[in-house]
Image (tube, rainbow, N blue to C red; front, side, top):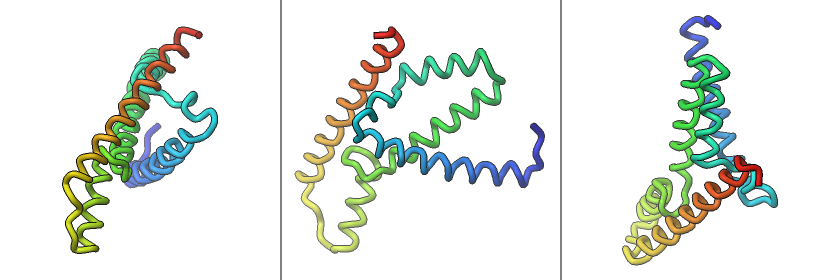
Length: 135
């Protein structure tokens, strides 16, 4: 549909806000009983992306990938060890307390966080493959 430039810009901010809330809710749902089963990783995104490309307009396909990019950016800002949000949190704590957090602690926490993220990623890929295979 055709919208004036002002309305398009407004829609960008509305979509960004909705996407931000959705990613935060999605991360929260990971810790519920069926949360991990509802999550989708690279395999599920690839399948859904192919379905969008063949059944909808190219602009819908581009919109989907734009939303994926925004979601990844927001997810990366979460204050979880191994992500950029963790580095921002550490910098903020050091700035407020005027004390340096030991590098050994920061490195250990980052390694633990990355290991947990990799385990989550592997679990989601396995669940995606099982879901697609119908298992």
